[in-house]
Length: 199
View 1 (cartoon, rainbow, N blue to C red):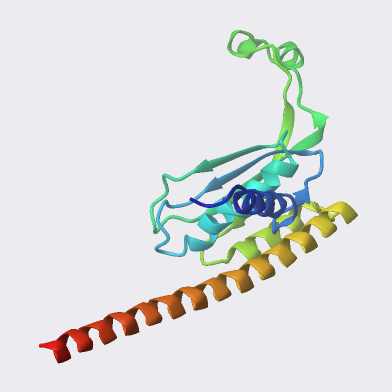
View 2 (cartoon, helix red, strand yellow):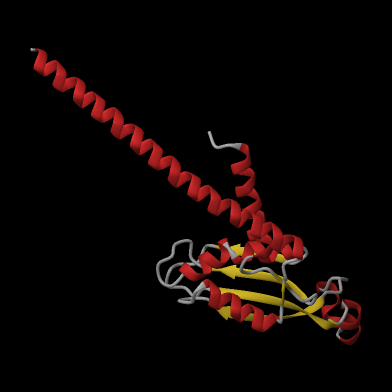
């Protein structure tokens, strides 16, 4: 069983990777939603979108919990892979009361809700890497990168030191085990030769 300190180091490393890794950006307030549509398999140029979904989108959601981020994996391999960014407009749409006042023929078919208008920008993700998709998204949205704090840098340094030390210890342990196994094999071989000489 893996020791508790080893598991805690692994967990701390993963949490820091989510907070500071590729995709750690703060999106502007005018972004309502990010929607991805791509094929569930990587054939046909859908590998980049899939990697973006698994790595960068997780970090984007961590730093932007209020932004809805949805995925649609029903596309076929020959379909386009599209990332849609929905921006809220500064001017709200006309209310249904204003619409019914100007056009009485549609009075019974409208609802009394006021929704802000949306501007949708899309990125074609097909045959692009996850880094290229992220770069295009940052350019389009003018997202701000999350900088590591001094405490996080210190934690990263300590975790890296522990990782290097652990790798050295693991290599030493392998050498010791190999030496013990070799000695055991030589002893068994010597015992076999003694038994053969006695006969």
